[in-house]
Image (cartoon, rainbow, N blue to C red; front, side, top):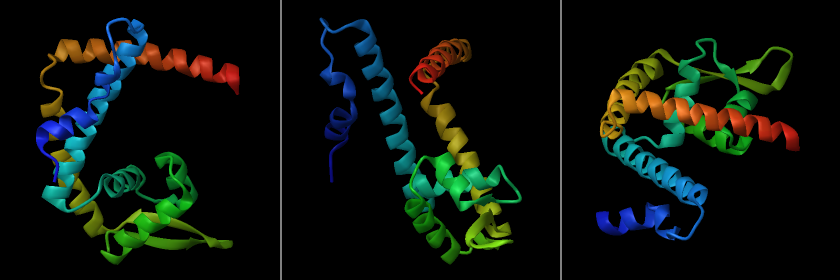
Length: 168
């Protein structure tokens, strides 16, 4: 078991940066460090409070947004993981009766996955806790600072989308 200090050091990507590095590199490492720390905390809390992994939570979140369910291929695309990974997660959640897998009309090899009533109820409780954790983890920033950071990151994201189109 790692100590909190060792874990913090290992997940802090910023230790790679030096004062003589370009500001953009230092910013990238700061963003990566913050994201990693928040994600690690959420992973740990999901495991401790609900005995669930972040990928399983993420899959249930995708299904919660789509009451009629989603094809397995769409789940894979949205989660940016392989079809095999989605199949494994769906298998586990199906065994726990949290999701239902149904064959697609006209294609017996394709399946649509949806939350069961029990899955919806359980996910609702997890989602509320998750939101509370995110609010807590971002609380060092004021509401105004969060809005400002959101706008700045939106500008960065839009710029990346334009650059991505140039290479496609």
